[in-house]
Length: 432
Image (spheres, rainbow, N blue to C red):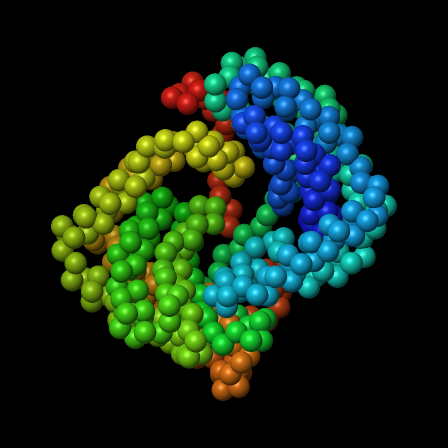
């Protein structure tokens, strides 16, 4: 995916939605739903609704996808204007959201800045969109999840109806797209790899920092230990930086998962403190937390472990939630449909000794597996804060400026591929 194809995909989605608006609206009243999304890996078609009406609905949408071509210049101009407005609106998000965006921008590919997309969007014509529509379904490699109150033959019939409408040629494995996600470089000391950007909204007086500490080892028990640590940290972190130090209204911590790799993520936004100071406060908290962790009793640790196990064992009560969970397994090529049970089993093995080992290796200064990415956003409304953007980095930190150069030197996160097992009918129905 490139900025050009990303813009064409947005235009195609707007155009298709406009052409199907009346039909999809009426279908929605009858309890049916459809969505089309473009991802780095594939085009995702999602259908939902009552099983007796779904086959006709799927067939109608499939034929509409194959036939749709936009030929109205006025509509194209309207779609471009709407997309342009959406892209420009990103600058009006809050600084902590921009800090998170830059974190994501450096560590994933494809990823594009709004300005890149706006420049490509402005160039696109009806002919460009027509060629895109001609090619978008020309080749493909399909994976399908059908879940709910349907017999296997009914499910397969719906799949065949889409195949017969789109008539795509098989795309070879080597040509199939995917996203790349990168490991953060090791940084045993200091604040790690640092991104510094000015806040796009010149009138916003807030600065923000998002700090990510990544555990690269994909061993499931270690990953679950990191989740337990996140649960232990949440209240003390908020209490110290929000309640006691009163740095700002936005103070949070949690876990970020990228494929099979998890990270601790700390977010702080302030209207009076600059991003350098916020960074210092977060690391001061982390550097002082080990004694608190060491002081926890085995019983206290067990409470956190049991709480996480209970969350993972919680029964899914909505078909849509279970479908999304199973589809994510297919998309990632893992096919671990009992993932929550596996994670609960490994979580039960987490004890205080393991938590201390993970902390010392991943979070503490000098940790041999410590990987830190610090994303700082500085308000333009305060000249003093802007001067801090050029302040020297602490010893051991590395400034990141060019995302492409960073990605070229970084290691990819590679998760082991799973095997697609046959799925037996379960509580909500059957899958194929």
